[in-house]
Image (tube, rainbow, N blue to C red):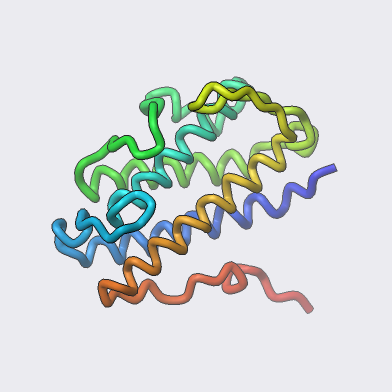
Amino acid sequence: MTNTSHFPQLAAYNQWMNRKLYDAAATLPADRLHEDRGAFFGSLFGTLGHLVIADLIWFKRIADALPGLASLQCLDDLPRPTSLDQRLCTTLPELDALRMTLDAAIGAFCDEIQPAQLDGAFSWTSMKGIASTKRLGDVLLHVFNHQTHHRGQATTLFSQLGVDVGPTDLLLLLPEVD
């Protein structure tokens, strides 16, 4: 059986880090934010956009597989991305609003999901047409790991631009125990 307590912690970390990144991004002029920095998705804006795209893709897949989840119903009105580098937004405020909607939905999803659902099979077809079936809890771990991977790239890009996003360790959000 899956320990579901880790997922709300990861969702809270995700939301905390995204807020730090978007606050840091708001300190930059638009040309610096959109400047190609040689990252996987070019610019800081491209990297932040990719994270939104990937989360939309994964959580829309999950919503399709588990249609009764109230937490993901807000995704119904959001676009279904067609590529990993698609530009859904052109400005930081637009992207930030979409990010906040996703972070709220992800947090609510992690509070709503049940251990049996996380232990269940989850099937999807990739954007390249490859069908897969894996345990939903394992896929969710991948999603959070993917977010951390690209946020690490973003913090490096910020550092190169002289912007310190501050501490980034999950450890800072973990509760103390007696």
